[in-house]
Length: 520
Image (cartoon, rainbow, N blue to C red):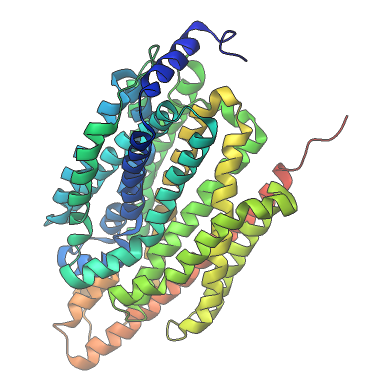
């Protein structure tokens, strides 16, 4: 459809965008890209930077198992829940204003997280980090589309912008290990502040203002339903893992959250201007690609998180050594992302995705069988396979989401793509973390010389067990340490098996649902 044939609102947007960018010199366009990509890099880093700092943070704040899971994944869950909402709000009030306010919120929340003195404070600060990240992440694609009017330049800019998040998530554990070893766990958040200050200073100068002349209605009821429903379901999952079972409160909370999510979906399908257009999911390829991204990225982020804990708590690695041990996984992930187009050209998206998911699942299964952090060299091959397979799936899955949608709906597809990554990260840690917590509590054996109160404390988490050892006789403390390591090791093995099974199911679904339509 040509510009002359487009409806008036669309022509108005296109004409406005062209007017805003025609006077911008090339250097300013790339500075805008540097600003928004820098913000997305921080988003990715904060997704995984806390992973290696968890043991030292747990010893200081002493969170419950459910509290620890909230600390880790409330950031990604908040980000996922608010991405589409913030995008709609940015279209209405101005994208530049939304992005800059998001940077300010992110910086203030980082400082609050760094100086938190309780589990509740850190959870609140991490949620605020998610709000700030959603504010500037949601509008950056629209800003890139406004600033880069040349199709070729825009494609390069979007590629750099997309890679920034993956690079951030990949280097997060190493950054966390370096910073934690030198300055403590709080510094993993404090390093955001000077970076945000520079990004904000440049962003105020170079980012142009833009907004949709005919913005969609902001569905406040839909926001409340989605956020509350997701929080209820995740809360029930975490409580079930902490108590190694369910009770009336957990069942009621899970049911209420599920009902709210159902009402959200029903409302979005009925209103004329939905926050999330579920009609896109009628396209089989779109739905399948979205599920691939959620399953794969959820398993990958969960692997990063639990592997760093396993290396430190069972293998007794330092934070820095644990971060370095993940570099082969991160490097293989980058190689997979780069070679994904070649794999798609060689075998097609269907079989490239299926094969990569199967490779990721096989690598996790191999890690579950091999085990033993003392033999890192044996773990190296499965780590490389997991990273490479995940890199292909994340790249091709994201590309399939965008290519399955009609060009005029690319903005909505991009919002769902971004949301699926963050939702996968949050749900992966929540679901698999619940499994690990339940296995740890039920598998911790009786320790001679440890009374009922001491056992109840040790069952809370590995960090609680470590704190308890300081007040026990040496022989009892050593027995408790080995028992806690065995229970955590078993829990990690079960998590790997669960993730591998989920990926196998996703691979089979991909092979079936991405088949080409039958010729008539």
